[in-house]
Figure (cartoon, rainbow, N blue to C red):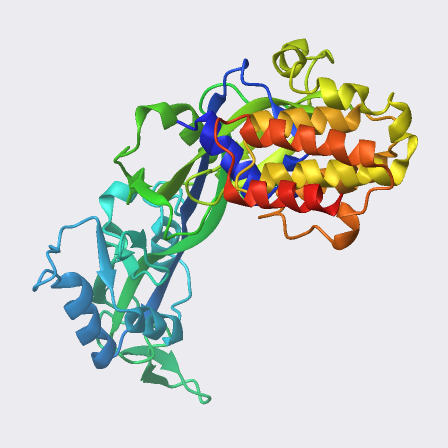
Length: 444
């Protein structure tokens, strides 16, 4: 949980200019929001089917027997399996072989091919073993033949004799090569399909509880991290639904599925929790109340300011707590002697130097100085901002000789008194604070 102390340090480190002009409202609790970035790599499997009845020579017949009709030697397949993975070379040779044409048997055989597949739409992912690349489906998948639609037989036209009777040009009967099987005497019907794996990456950003109003999605997206910072979970592999993810992600998995389309193999899902915290602060230059946010404070911290809160209000409690300390500043602009604006700026620079001399501006000191500087109407807004920027100084080294050359002794003495008040407000005057006070004292 982000503490007020850690919050103040983060703002001081990451937004030093803004730090000098805001006051965190300690009365309003820091609120935590857990954003979750979820990214899914979806894999969709479609099937491209084809079939052919072809003439078969000895080489192709040997290959068909080895790959289809005598399958099961070492790959876990059996000859009666519905779908058998085969070498793509087999399909290439079938495609290159002579296509059998004609009526009767061949027409009926062609009509029956692929009936079991319905163009690939009836293939069940669970009925085939797709190749995987790690935990994802491999892009390059084998070709599967439909065992029930594959056959190897003698050519019905020549009855396996390789020739058929015909008449020559003289009208004499002669034996000629069978035109259907091209003289091989054997034909085969083969039906096959090829799984085609396509990928799509989709992502969503959701707050697990509530939401930060007006925060930009791009701001949160910048903190999603990369694969090295994401947690991986699986949802589905090869048709099997694993659902290995936290139950609070349940509603968002369906959102991912909707964005991915009709995917049938959601493979990898990655996520990262991005903690965010909101706080309320007051801009001391404008007096307005705003809501700010700290994103991912422990890993890649970012401060986002200027969220307008509903209903502008004034935090009088802050003023009340520092009223006694700031009384000097409240009257400084009304004092006749401080109508000299150069002496006025010298005083403010010296008081800031005392505040930062010990290397740490406390919240109380910052509140006192920022509110008080804003109330000095002799200063323009630009002058106020320039002076407030000094609160971010690491020490008092910004002082110059001119800062000690007051026009009025009275102004110098009033400044010395105020410097002593600030230096002793924490109960101990630091040696660096004493050196600044003594330098001004000895100047007059």
